[in-house]
Length: 125
Length: 183
Image (cartoon, rainbow over all chains, first blue to last red; front, side, top):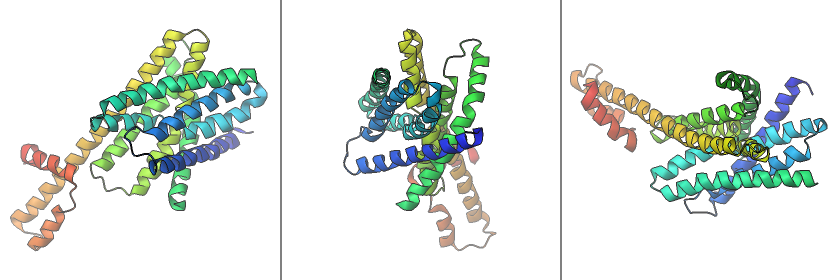
């Protein structure tokens, strides 16, 4: 792939990742009424697991295109740091301080654990 | 639904491409600023922190009554900034540090990036609120001048309409500003 087609490919898979995240957030919002941002949490943790798996399972140079399109593109667009940061601010502003701490602490702890699990699983297969 | 989805797709396309395009320059910038340790994911860190500041500014402007269409929020917030920033690369970066025995660096990266991200989103939110309050204060001054000299020949009810579209939050702050500093 040339640099330009790689960039366009990442844009396209990134767009699909963002759209998947949007549809999941909307779907969960109709079913989950509690203040904890469950959708973003689940998206970020599952995406971390998938990227961990991808990183070790496709570590060879032959897997570069897969890593770029699925990892940098799709999973990069699917998971989000900006929504996590802003939702934490929104929780704190609504005096949901316990939820705010649970949300960032839980996202980071579960995210790292999921990434480690994915990386270990990718090495095993 | 299809229109909303295409807005997110368009924003996501640009966001993911921007992240990919900025990765190399930001990696060199971060390594140059910090001196050594070129293996540290400065690209992901700088992308996530700028994205957190920008989402604070964007959503702050919306909450304080910026005249922007909800479509803009969807395309720029959910689409562009959602895809520009990334949580999975952040997590795999920290997990890689842990696996190579750099536990302290990993913990500092996790705690530092997350704290800075939330802080920057808050800073952006507050800055947008202040900017919008100044906007409304200026608009109030303009409509007050119309009331005083009547030079624009507006009927009183037309002048009232000038004040009406003020949102709740922006309005209260704006009145204080107009009395305190503008007048």
